[in-house]
Image (cartoon, rainbow, N blue to C red; front, side, top):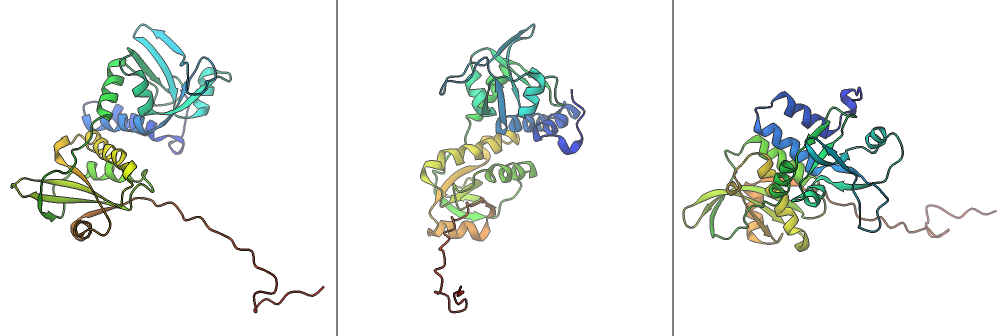
Length: 268
């Protein structure tokens, strides 16, 4: 393991340390798996990828078969001791690839504080968990109210998830809801979401719920046009999450000499 200063620790290192410090706490363990799913991981291969075809290096141990991933390229190089082929994939893609294969995940082995062997059963659980999503709003809403009683862990997780969804929607609002049938709950309403991005946004909300240890039924998801009355109601009472918006491309128009009266052309 390398001696790294706190400034050099990655988010995965920090989440792993929190999990190790509180082994009895489910929330810390969930946060580690969330960081693992969100991280860009460098998967060791036996040969260079051909198109989308990859051949992960497989390591047999007394605990089972494992592929190896690292959250920094230099950590992979340090472990291998020589240049090796690799594929850069998100943790959720790696979990999907390994699910049902009986293969575990070796993370940052021997080169980082977050060195850990994750057995195949845990990889399968992660893949299944990442597939959860909250229900889309179906019932008639009689009233929107400010959100109450939700744990800080969920709010923090939502903020982190939505911060990575730049350009997919204008904003999101978390509100309390009272339904026409008398039921109550919470709703995450997205405003001006791209239609193609709506499943991904709903899934991100579901992951925030799951990895915060909150029951899936605690929050619905819905999508609204920016000029709808509902969007105005959400803005009045809801907790707003700003989604980063991509910068508009700047068009530079060259100035024609002599066209600006304040800048007469130079005479040579």
